[in-house]
Image 1 (spheres, one colour):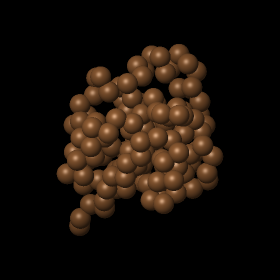
Image 2: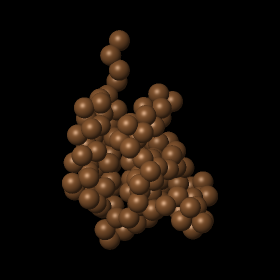
Image 3: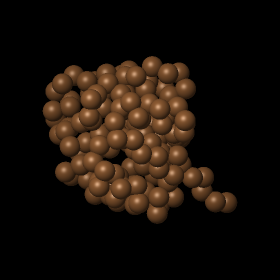
Image 4: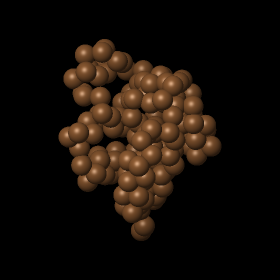
Length: 131
């Protein structure tokens, strides 16, 4: 039986890095839709109904946190796994108090500087198996 393809929404402002992630995840069975900012991400989520979201916290015009609060306000998206894949160090995120918010329901936090593409893929595969 073939593995079901996972629809993933990638929210990443760096176009070169996004292209790299997109290519790698597509090669590994993910259907990736990319948005560069929070507003485009909300539109993309509405159109594509993603199975999971990978989000950078440092976005143009809105933060990733603002996007997540808006995203989680829709009942259809409350159970969608969200992976933070960010340049913001985890300790900085945790000390902000936002990391403790149950409203965001973050499934995983990955620090870009300490995470390889294979580590990202392994975490996404784990989350997709649990869903």
